[in-house]
Image 1 (cartoon, rainbow, N blue to C red):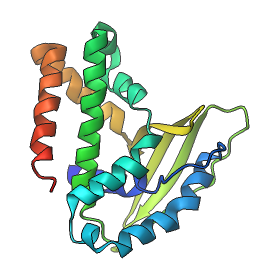
Image 2 (image 1 turned 90 degrees about the vertical axis):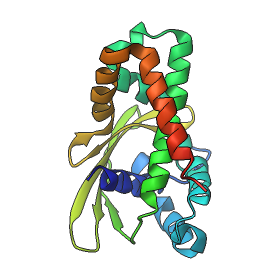
Image 3 (image 1 turned 60 degrees about the vertical axis):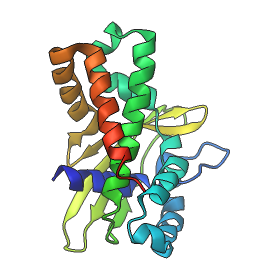
Length: 205
């Protein structure tokens, strides 16, 4: 189930292609690039056949520039963030980012032509926070709700959390992080993330 959740997230996130110089509404940005990115995936035989390294490069270039990893890591750490040193915070952000990239790359190799629909996002010009609602429809007819919490920055709208069928990505990681910190401290969590990333990297060719 967890693997499918990451697959759904990966599919949805891959629709965030290069942003225009001007800040556009978050839902408009997503819709404008959906067809282009999906067409690129369908046309790339390497990705379709499971070329993880090429997919990793695509995710790094097209998807993750639109995330606020500092805020995501801080939210995932919760109250433990304040207890971390500056160096620990830097390591946590780097390792958490790498973990998400590797995990999405692995999950997205299972892409099977799912269809994604987006609901219009109603925000005022002065709003700095938005919720983008979407539905991922499987070939079997099953629909999965995927929602994005986004914030407006000088570089455009950035994602800082996602919810799949009401389950928060950040809160899930917060529970995992808290458990590990209680067992072996912040350095122990960093080691777990580092080891996990090394293991995932061995499967990317």
